[in-house]
Each structure stands twice: as structure tokens, then as C-alpha cells.
Image 1 (cartoon, rainbow, N blue to C red):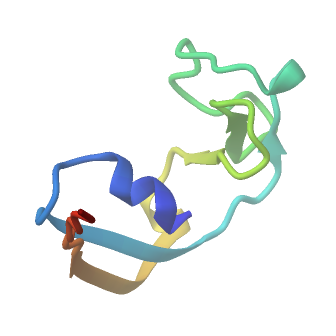
Image 2 (image 1 turned 180 degrees about the vertical axis):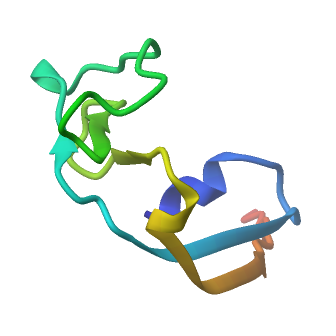
Length: 88
């Protein structure tokens, strides 16, 4: 989600988000959505891997191992400005 883009960088930092179309094919989902760094390739019979790295329903990560399975549709560039209001 776009809200995770604001987790990195400080205030007034330029950010870029890529909106992509991705072909997952036959995805592999590890038991309990565990994070597994030993998966250097997709398992046999699968085309991608789906994991939930933070345990939240909005933090699903989709891993593809071939660049021709994705296409960049949009590049969104923005700067988040932080405004401080002091009430006396």
C-alpha cells in the first residue's frame, strides 16, 4: 500500500512508487506465510512466492523470479511535506 512508502526517508523527501502488473502464475505460499530467505528460486511447479512478512493482511509480498512476469504501468513521484502547527 502507499502508506508503507512514507515509512522510509524523512520529511520533504522525494519518493517514487511503481504501479506494476504482475503475472503470479501458480504461486507457492509457505506454511503460516513465513518469511524464508533460502528461497533463491521458486519451488518446482510454482511460478512465484507469496509471503506475509509483517503478519498483517495488508502486508502481503509477492516475489517473482523472472523480469518478464512484470510490467511497470505507472511511476508516481511525490514529496511528502510535513507541516507543524503549534497551539498556544
